[in-house]
Length: 264
Length: 281
Ligand SMILES: Nc1ncnc2c1ncn2[C@@H]1O[C@H](COP(=O)(O)OP(=O)(O)OP(=O)(O)O)[C@@H](O)[C@H]1O
Ligand SMILES: [Mg+2]
Image (cartoon, rainbow over all chains, first blue to last red):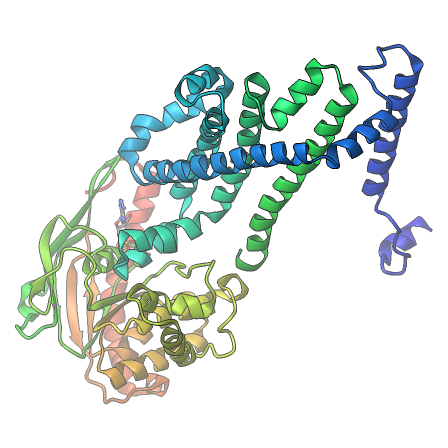
């Protein structure tokens, strides 16, 4: 009889929840239950695994105080600026490398070597150049963001259909017109992917820098909570941060996705 | 063989003079176009026909100013070209619509480049879209169209730039026979109306005879001018002319020329497949 339902799927009543969603909920609930048990068991220091109630309280406390939003804005500003600077720089360098075989042969391998290097090792230099304020955080975020954007732009540039370039040239498009009306739109998928990766590493670079040496920003708050052993507050901030990164990624992905549906 | 330079006259709008194109490949230099010379008169419809791989697209790109040549020169209205020329509009053999632009925006592309105001260029684009029979598809994107429809979008886009000389590389190759004939009629009609100088590259004999004032037959590798045939059929011509006796004679004549070249090409390629290295020359 099981076969019947497979042959006529429309006849089967639609499940309230997809099995995947259900599984996810079950897993999350299990993790929370285990966490809570662990917290009350006393096997670990109470402070390392605070109870959910304490974390909830800290979360509310966090979200009802202006201080948190101020620091959030600082970090967001740093990440945004880093994305803008590193992204446009990466785009320019990537397009140049993609367009010029000679330059690409000469320099692109360095990008591949430097790309995966943890950029935090440059933080001391950034502090010397840009000070302990947001400047050094932006610099580190910019540096992190630059590589994935440049590499995807260079690869994307080489994948452009040569015929489309010839069409542009045959209509005597200027260099600027070629870039804005042909190269960039033709590369939109690799570029969006690069920006997505860039956003991730800019976030990591900025936050990491804030945890090292700073007096503002989310990274600073987190490390501050840690050093004063305010664990519920630290977890609360981690949760908010987690949700925000998911949101940011979804927004960038959406931009790419919408494009895909209509314009292929 | 016909002496190549004999066919030129000095009021030609487009002159191809002794052009040679060689490509450097891993197994040596390949001559794709070998001392080709011909002229195109103002308002003339000239077809270039030849077997696959004889260098037609190469010649097309050289005339369009997109490919440098090893020897010789190309001139438009007496001026040597060194890059894409304003008076020349190209329709490519390959897929060439912009997938991120709607049909209207594709066709309006050349108008956008010259800075025509939006309302005006959309109106112009609409005109050419309807000319190639794509009414109702203005807001579609290329991936929603058939291959033949996309090719018509490319044609409309080039027509929209209103070139003095229209250069087409097998624009109808992807179309079925009926659409090909109808669109051929359309192109011919437009060409006659605008008295537009047209150079059509094709390997379809019927198409070439139906549309052309003259047909240039190319040899198989290296691509040379084998013969230039005047097509003395009355105008206006439509696809109906295909059945006439005179038409049949022209087709037979060109077919005889081409068969020789095509079979030479086939032999050459078989050779090449059996002895991949050094079988050339
Ligand atoms: N960039 C290139 N590098 C090396 N050889 C090339 C290059 N472009 C074309 N050729 C060679 O030049 C010759 C002519 O090619 P071309 O594309 O002009 O032929 P065609 O007449 O347009 O053929 P078709 O009818 O199949 O389109 C072929 O032998 C091809 O292999
Ligand atoms: Mg070709």
